[in-house]
Length: 302
Length: 266
Ligand SMILES: Nc1ncnc2c1ncn2[C@@H]1O[C@H](COP(=O)(O)OP(=O)(O)OP(=O)(O)O)[C@@H](O)[C@H]1O
Ligand SMILES: [Mg+2]
Image (cartoon, rainbow over all chains, first blue to last red; front, side):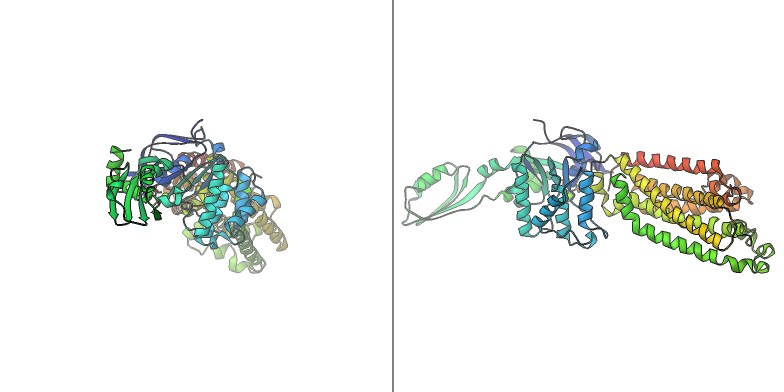
C-alpha cells in the first residue's frame, strides 16, 4: 500500500530561520499518527507543506500518492488549521455550507449531527464565537466531508474535557473506518490513547518515531504488592526486568521494565491483599526527547 | 455562478451596498445643484471660473464651463470625484480578495480547498469585476435619470461612455490592489501602491496638459486613457478604453502567476 504522506529531505527555511530540516517521514494508511513537539518545533510548518500552503525550500512531499500542488487531492483531505481564523458577521452554518459545496457537497444533516455532537453553535456570527466554539466549527469542517485523510493541527486546543473526549471518539471512528489521521500536539497525553505511532520534532528536526504499543511494553512502570505476612527479599531478587526493588515487611515495591510475567509469578506464591500498578509514564520518556539530551539519547538508542 | 465568486460577492455585499448608496447620494446631491447654477450664469460662468489659479483649474480638469449641462456633469462627476470614489471602492474590494484574508488568517483554509490557486485568484477577480459592474450600473442609472430630471441635455450614450470609463478605470485600480496583494500578501502595501498610482496618475494627467516637463509621463497614467478622450464630449474613446482593459488583463495575469508561486500566510 502506498503511504498517505511521504516526505524526503523536506526542508523549509523562512529566510534564514529554520522551520523544518531534512524531514523523512512516512504516514501509513489507516493509522493515527501523533505529531509531537515543543513550541516552534516545526509541526505547523510540516502540515502547511503537506497542504501546499507553503512551498518547500528543498525536498519532496507526496500526499495520497500525488503532489499536494494538485488541487484535487486536497478535496480528499480534511484540515483543521492550528491558528484557525473565523471572523465577520457570517454564520458558521453558511460558512460550512460554502466549504462543503466546494468540496463536492455535504448534507445539512451531516453538519447538524456533528454540531449536535460537539455542541457547537452554528447560528451566531463567527466573529463573536468563543475560542472553543470556533475550534468546534473548525473540527466540523474538517470531519464533515468524511475525508480519507485528516490533518489536525492542535485539535484539542481550547476544548473543554468533555468535548475533548467526544473529539477523541470521533478520531477513533475515523480510524475504525480505515481512514488516516495526522494530529499534532504538545503533549503525549492528548494523543497517546488514540495514536498508533508518534513522531517527535524538535527545533525543526525529527527526533524519533515510536510505535505506541511497543513503547508501552517497553515503558517502566511502578508496581506495589502488599501481602498478609512479611516476605523474603530473595524471592524477588534477580527477576527479569525488575529494578529498584524495596522489600519492607509485608510490602514489595519495584519498577518493572517490559513484561511483568516473572514478577507476577514470583508474587503469586504468597497471599496478596492489595496490588498497585501505575500506568506507564510515557510522558516522562517523551520529555527527555524534548530536551537537548533527548537528541543524543535518540541518536544512540532508538 | 462558480461558488467562490458567489461567496466573494456575498462577502462584499454590505460594503458594496454602502458604496452604492453613498456614491449615488453624492452624485444626486451635485446634480440637484445644477438648476440653481444655470439660474446664475454670472456667478459661475466662464469669466468667474477664469479667476481661479491656473494650476488649480488644471487639477479640476480645466473648469472651462459650468453652466452647460455637459460641462457641469463632466467637471463635478466625471472629471475627479466619480473616478476617485470608484477607485477607492475598487481598491478596498481588491484588497479583500487576497491580502486582507491572508492577514487575518482566513485565507489559509481557502487555499486548502480543492480549488487551483490560479482559479482562486481568477474567481476573486471575477467577483471584483461583477461587484464594480453592479455599482456602475446603479450609479449610471441614477445619473441618467437625474440629469434628465434637471434638464441637463446630455445624451444617454455620452453618460454611458463616461460611466464605462469610470468602470474600466476602477477595475484597473482594483486589479492593481489585488495584484499587489497577490504578490505581497500585505494590504498596506497594496493600498499605498494604489494611492500613489492614482493620485500621481491624476496629477500627471491633469497638470501635464500644460506643464511640458511632465507631459511625457501622461502616457503611463491610467487617468490619461480615461480623461484624454473626453468621453462625455466626444463619446467612447475606444482605443483608450482598450488600453485600460488590456492593462487590467496584464495585472490579472501577474496576480495569478505571483500568487501561484508563493507561500501563503508567512
Ligand atoms: N512565517 C514565518 N516566518 C518566519 N519564521 C517562521 C514562520 N513560521 C514559522 N516560523 C519559524 O519556524 C519554526 C517552526 O514553526 P512552527 O510554526 O512550524 O512550529 P510549531 O511546531 O507549529 O509550534 P507551535 O507548537 O508553537 O505551534 C519556528 O522557529 C518559527 O519561529
Ligand atoms: Mg503550530
